[in-house]
Image (cartoon, rainbow, N blue to C red; front, side, top):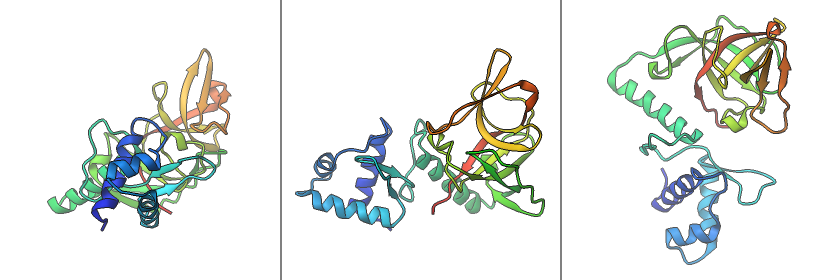
Length: 229
């Protein structure tokens, strides 16, 4: 349970960071909460980090990431942040339980690389339960992300992605792509002329430009379940 000041600070940071990726300054936080010194802000941030609501990002000034939102907080419809997505997923699970709605069980096939491609590990015996609201039409399966090349799309190492089975996808869609019939990877797909481009969402990685016959779409991303370490 968060204190009133912790909750107020967390929501202030979250709402400001919807406008960009830079957190407000300690001076702005101090003024927003009506505190007399920045030391109080330091203590509040440390408490939020310890409780898993905030994360300090290394090697960047004023670098904070909101990992989750306070219980009971309802994100705005236009709030597309990862924390808002996590909050909506939690709320959906709670509402499903309160309404007596049965969870959907889908197969969890194993790990897929969001960095260097690796072969998808198919474990036909593993499965997970998820709210029906996280699924679209058709068949679905889940994969665990291994790697960091999709972090700018809010997909982190260890997250679970929900994939809708399909063999085609529109330009710009995040898909599971099978390269050369054995390397499975999660990337944004684009078509340029007679080439297929698999684009990462991390500047540390380069796009892969491939012949169309080398790439098979295995499904498209429809939902994500955040994992906190």
